[in-house]
Figure 1 (spheres, rainbow, N blue to C red):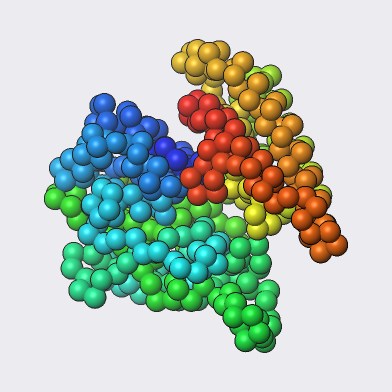
Figure 2: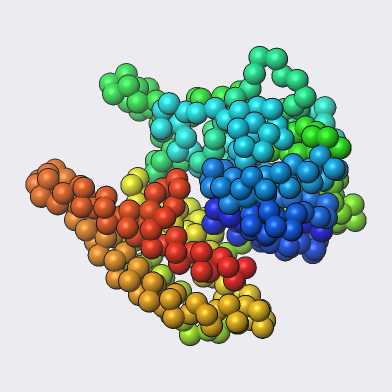
Length: 405
């Protein structure tokens, strides 16, 4: 049995849910409060990306202690990105390392694939990738603070070079000519290459008591999008075979397209919200504020709340693909009216904000200051909250949808 900690995961939770579902391994989706009250059992706890700080808050002191007890007693822990950060010394303390900050904000705004070198000295690395270079997906990663004396931590992968689909903020790094990048650096002091990742650990592993952990700032649960990007799924399936289900025969994770998920729950409120969200996304694309990255992810112009649009799309599509059993129906009947009211306000406000944001871009050169930036920021905060820590009306909607999972 696999347990998945859901809090503050959003689209990254849905990616992991898709991956685990596809294996057929029994799993449970839990919130931090569930763990604090009832503890953990089974073979493994998996923690998706998202905010490590908010995950720690959701677990609370009691939940954190239950996770430590579970791993110390022989359980396995796998954390991706925010889930990796949760296990570091300042939170759970499964790994003795700390998180390292990035003083250059651009260096954090990296998304896509990175070429990484994998160790040949760990059984957790698939034999076919051992000692080789692999393309691994990173989505706005943090960094491990690797001490000079590395005791008790095995480095499984290190960053080496940008991959073919890497973006820095909303700029496709792979499409930028080298001479222009050098010119920007000389003229403006802008360094677009994510050099703060060079040679740094991407994935690490170790033990805690009788248990084991694997932490990766690469999202190994990412579906393959192009030839060569299947290495992450190969690695995740190998770890699941090693730690959880030796008979697992899958060779690759299946593709994911949230818009193509089957509708098993034909609820009028959910269907209406999905249509309204699709209309907002079409508008944002027409305005040049959102653009397609792959089958499951939208890219966005810098300053646009694209992460929230992605999470809402994943949540609505997944909710409609759930079986409407008695427990879900009872929960939904209690919240449907609140959901409809909140989504109606959100759809109206988001439409207005998208158009205002586009107008502000148009006026930026010809009439700067005509549309006050502070007003746009306040409206965005009320609708979408903080880019890192959530909040706003969209967070209320996501909470209602995620409770259904």
